Amino acid sequence: MASKDKAFYSKNTLNLNGNLVELSFPKIMGILNVTEDSFYDGSKFTNDYEISRQVEKMINEGADIIDIGGYSSRPGANDIDENTEMERVLRGIKSVKEISGDIPISVDTFRSTVASKSLEAGASMINDISGGNLDGKMFQTVHDYGAPYVLMHMVGTPQNMSSKTAYENLLVEMLNFFSKKLQDLTQFGIKDVIIDVGFGFSKTTPQNYDLLASLELFQILNSPLLVGISRKSMIYKELKTNPENALNGTSVLNTISLLKGANILRVHDVKEAKEVLKLVNLINN
Image (tube, rainbow, N blue to C red; front, side, top):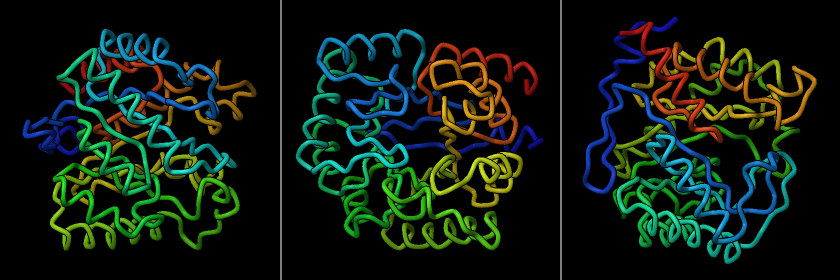
């Protein structure tokens, strides 16, 4: 178990639109998938009414950040063109802004053009599943807008990542990946970087659990840690169920993630994640 100083009480902060967000107490990032193609039916919102209703629900339940995605990154997902993704994301940003002008918006994209248009429209953060590997202009774009950046580990693309799971030593290779990327980001002058180890991306189920067991090792990178494990196949396949029935398993793994140093939980179910956060805090307080 990670210590209090390095886990729940880290002194990391994020600069979101000029406001310093303190991560000494972990935050909840609510997922808003503005797409028809998602592994979890309960997270697909494709019209303005559905989007607005879900945004209101997450804000009322205590979400600290809304993460908007217009491109499904589930294993084997269909590739969509940039204009389609951009239209979806901008619709989501508009809906969030109409409901709350205060809550920070993250955009889940690996395309620099979508990132720039999103930041111009009012987004505060970019969440890039590719760690800059799928668009060479991403780091420069993030620098130009002064936005925090979620750096995730993935090998390949969403279309082929399931076949990219051969590692000599997963943890060593991932630490090397993040160290190199952090150096690159520093050279671009990007200071606010969040690490996401990428559960379910280019990793088998046993590898995902090995990674979770050693999650505290990534604190050596001295960056906030985001965990996105909500309702994923590493949960529901092991429990022989489906995403719709994986909430309990999600809460269990979110609890473990917090105890091992997670600063941000990216979730479909904000209310339940806030309850996990509250109870874990009783241990660490």
